Image 1 (cartoon, rainbow over the protein chains, first blue to last red):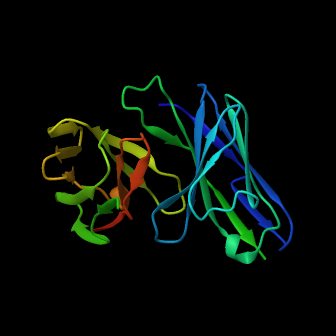
Image 2: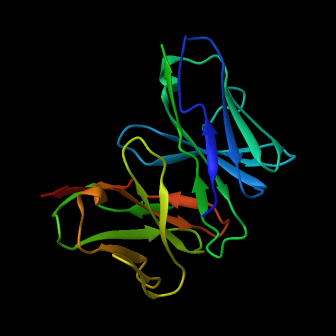
Length: 117
Length: 109
């Protein structure tokens, strides 16, 4: 299957700082990538849909000024958590849809665990 | 509203068979996915059903009934490594995935 990488895998930062998470599709071009957040023992919560060359589409309740998404190329999307606070601590996962796949499924990156002190 | 229901937790014995059910109510339907997620890791794709019936893939099988809004994932010959959460997700009319909360499967020796 298609491979999606995510960096960093873990990050600890101080409250008030910004953190950037990168999501890359390694062996395919992804016009659409997705950013999820997951709390312990909870399901995936879609934050936004990232479209190459255009603005991201945010889900209701997600602050676009706090979670900045940039999809500058067909293989890279970034999520920047601005002015992070402890309540932003979570597991962030990106995924990309490989349109070559007959199932149109999403392939997930390994996730980034963010801890804000 | 859109809704995916699946049991929160199930326990089964190594070597046995377990069936994880998923019921859904969504605006439109473009397929149902099952993903496996080990603790602290990202989900991995298991199966996809868009037509009624059973899809078999090794020890795992997935069934779909669109008229009943129902699917199940069947795991045979359970192994300890199958201990994980199993996520049911439906692709709606906008091709967006609607996720269930996941079923934590505990395998006992």
